[in-house]
Image (spheres, rainbow, N blue to C red):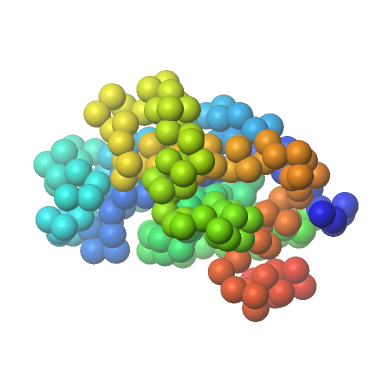
Length: 228
């Protein structure tokens, strides 16, 4: 497997795996961040966020966040410094990142001019390109029955390790799927395990970002520096 040597090795910068619970209607109700450095979780952050609109009962059944649980917290919009700072330091990652990209752009359409980690030395004003663990696993392991986050963790035998990470980093009542930091840690663990494979020792950030694109056209545009 050949990689572009002009691009950064995946160990060269932190990778910030994030997850949001909420919707465009309710706003972001909870965020989770798990930062990876050199294949290890080195930093986590999470909290509930005040709703901006109605929280549907269907959504509550999934993420288990009732409005009264989050009403006393500041809204997500007060976390500009955190998330714009993360984008400056390393690429953002998520499991099927379309949701996270959509939700963060609903609050802040653009970050400040930030490094384009696909091509060192260049900058762009966008939250992406995103590193997407869902797309990566679909491409690297096409035989897997489902690329759903929980399904992958169970299929590859990572559940016990995930629960150990969650016990260390998550609030005691949020150690479950569809809790933001738990899901961020799950996606981070999938990435760690993928990169532990000797076949991927030389992987670059650019390769990971390219393989995270949702279509052949998007991958080609990213490789030609035309995505943004």
